[in-house]
Length: 317
Ligand code: ADP
Ligand code: MG
Image (cartoon, rainbow, N blue to C red; front, side, top):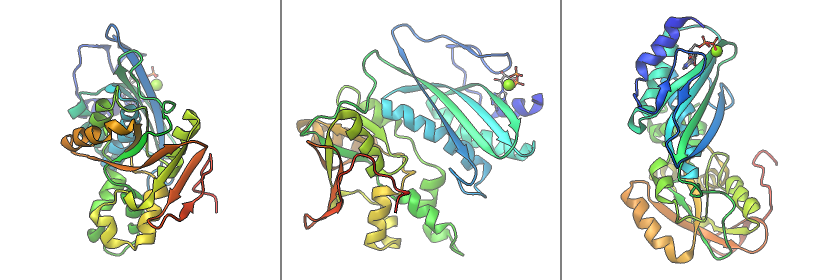
């Protein structure tokens, strides 16, 4: 790999941490895990045309590649520390590297997340980020702890990113900027995840869609969930620009939201809602954990919109 490109990346991402013994520039990074901490580690790959649309700006790609990974750490309640960045690009375009590094750094810097290494190769545009974060032993939020009677909650609003994707083909995208921003620059709920440690019984980030991801909690916890479609939090942008049926569909199965879906004992829900409101994202009760399997979605009249099933696949007809 040409060294000046790595230098460009390093120039944009200059978080200094005492726990990085050796960062970019050697054969491997060396880090010091603080005593008494466990590491939470996640990796996610974004492929152009699959995980972000062709034409997405370099800085948005850099932001999103880190954001989806920080979202995984958030869902574990972990505190971000280090990242690796593996870049495959069709050409060594310097402006692209600068843009990508700048978008990455915009999100990394406020978290004091250090980029400690990576890899750079030629090929179809693909960005892989691996992140490392800390948790206290036994405190990581798992998918497996939901109990019958728990309340199901979700941070922020659902469906904006999928709606934003639908709007990209419009001649004038300006009216849809807020939703397109949620698609290109998802905000990982890191502080919310940390606040849920010791309170939430199960947690997951919504990447594939609410029904699919809550389904993972149900499977891991051996329970079912009943969701009230009328309670789904939707943004005013989504409700302004889309008919109710589409807005509901995006919120239930659109994906790319990167909100946290979690379960808490019923007597903790109000307090959790207040704490997450103070953190800016808020949290809304959307349903209950029940006996059985899979996610059942009920409308305001009590009619079942989606039957419970253990593996919802939003690609299926
Ligand atoms: P090697 O052949 O030993 O893997 P590289 O030339 O791939 O060496 O990398 C040299 C240094 O630059 C290593 O420390 C590596 O982690 C870092 N590096 C390479 N590509 C990236 C990247 N895209 N982002 C961050 N660091 C990178
Ligand atoms: Mg290498």
